[in-house]
Length: 217
Image 1 (cartoon, rainbow, N blue to C red):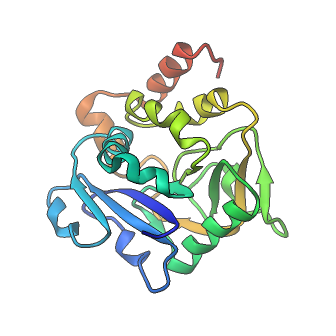
Image 2 (tube, rainbow, N blue to C red):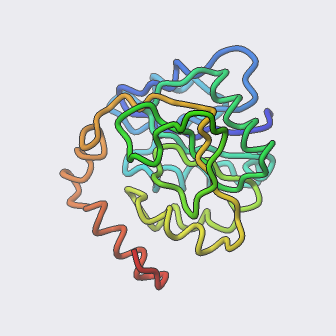
């Protein structure tokens, strides 16, 4: 059992196999939802085939782990279209630990909201909440407090608003010293297909979740 954990919702074109190399400081859980999920069954330390949305799948993965998840210092929940190396993943977790972060997100080279673009000469940027949920990293200090919210959202846009509400005083940052490449253009990819097939609207889901927690977004 390594120090950290990456749980990826892996579709047919997942890039997670490119992340895995020697000297990992993290274990990998492949939560597969594509048309041939079992092709990924030997890619990591944990595997399950779970059709459906992103965050219901993440919820099922955490539930499957049970008490094992409590042994990891940090747990990341990346999209499967991120290009990154083992060294970059190791560095991300190292920065989270060194700076005592509770919620974190790597900066992204492209196809992202502006606040996730890397800032020159900056290691981390403290923010009030995560700008997006392409690759949230959660510490063990906050994961038990927010894990119940995973099953309340398929797309996950509301999570970045609810988490700081449930964890007042938590430390959140964008890690500028680690830059991943978000390879799919905004408005494309499996999320769009999922919303079309299910009728779930990510923005509507965000507003409904915010309302349940008494938040204004």
